[in-house]
Amino acid sequence: MSVVFCDLVDSVSISRQLDPEDLRDMIRDYRQACSDIVRRFGGTTAQFQGDGIVVYFGYPIAYEDAAQRAVQAALEIVAAVCAMAPQVDQRLGVRLAVRAAVHTGLAVIGE
Image (tube, rainbow, N blue to C red; front, side, top):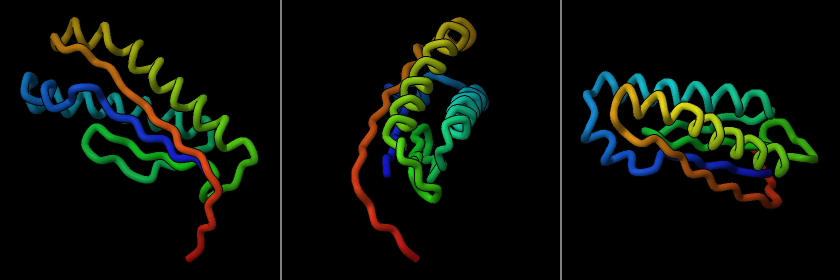
């Protein structure tokens, strides 16, 4: 099983700079981009917490290449946020960046 965690860099500072509706829209777009990428690689979104996202690869559907899928998804999330950043900077005046972490290991999961 592999777990991916992504969150926006300096999100507390960004949240102080933006109007609440603009922040909501930016987070919504970020979450949608993440969700689309996760789904494409067969991952399962475990939870969103603010600007953080936790994703499972290899659970509930086991894949022999779960680690590879997780890394590819994380890299694509970083690329997607990099692609969004210039528009966000121009529209809202904030620098958008994301960090991603991947952990892989054996897991036994049951009810």
